[in-house]
Image 1 (cartoon, rainbow, N blue to C red):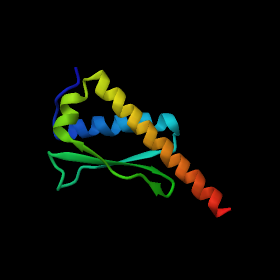
Image 2: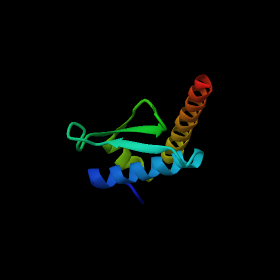
Image 3: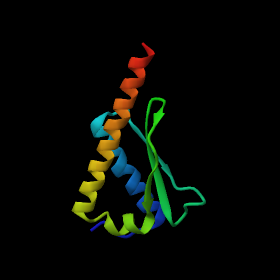
Image 4: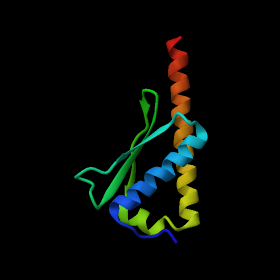
Length: 101
């Protein structure tokens, strides 16, 4: 149903998917998608930002995302991964706030 697509179309889908699942944990979370020249047509890097804290980069192969985005199992696993990383960002932010008090 959703498999395939151009590099930019798949990147837009990935950003929307990650954003949707991160914001289910906290609407203040933002997704930064790296798709610059060195990644063009090959891969994406995504980070979650919450305040001043930024997650480690999640690496995605363009072809894997393009081929798998129609798979319920793959999307479910990616949603769980994203929400887990989002919860970790929130926990790190809370710990940083508590340490500043």
